[in-house]
Amino acid sequence: MSVSARPRPRALDSPAPKVVAARHPWRWVGIAVVLVLVAQFVHGLATNPGWDWATFARFITARSILDAVVVTLELTLYGTVIGFALGIVLALMRLSRSRFLEAVSWTYVWAFRSIPLIVQLLFWFNISYLYEELNFGIPFGPTFFGFPTKDLISPMGAAVLGLALHQAAYAAEIVRSGVISVDHGQLEAAAALGIPRSRQLRRIVLPQAMRSILPNATNEVISLFKGTSVVSVVAIGELFYQVQVIYGRNARVVALLMVATAWYIALTTLLSIVQHYVEKHYAKGATRNEDGWKWAR
Image 1: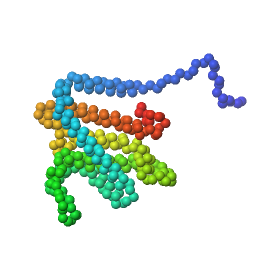
Image 2: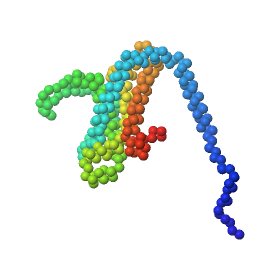
Image 3: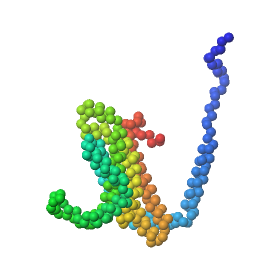
Image 4: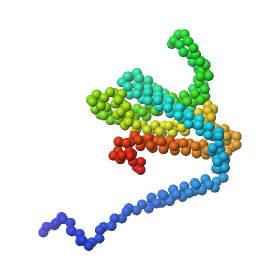
């Protein structure tokens, strides 16, 4: 007796097997719970008088608040531009073949990442206690001219200096991590073709490194934007400082904090939109989609 391993042919008139989707009852329970919590939160926002939306509406576009928003954007812009410019230099020093430059860059990053930002701001704000004048001349010799430090570094200058130097330490590591993420074999191939090192960096390394640099860099810019609230310790009229001044007068703490929150959310959203399109630009060529990165995933 023999047993055939061939399957029986299905009758032509027999129905096709029905595919039943897997059921996830607990997923729907979770969705229902989240929707209930969101509905309760929205209901509380609309009906709780403690939020004081009338005060919020009066101050959200007040002239003092708008001026403070401009100061916050200026601090963010200056800190970002100066910080990343210095960070790129530090990253190249760290990647250089000079042990001395590598040590200098590492020491800078280690020091400024270790010291809290508020301490750095207070240090630069009170630098005149250590150095009354900034002199220019021959080292350990006569000086030609000098400037009083208290007149040279204003509160705004101290804030920009502190933010930029602090940002440079993190920017250096972001740029360095993006550069070393590029496959070294591409550089070897470019060198074999006789492409100069400057062109290798500009045309091969940076376009690929930007895909790794941009998300982290944008996170740092957003953190810096929100971190400008720390400069209130040196009496700079940025957004959070101005909000504190106003609710110190009218005692409408929650409404004024919501004013600051709304501006932070709105401007952070704009930065995220810019990040979206810049990343999409640098993602071209990384995928087979002609539009670049598939943002649906």
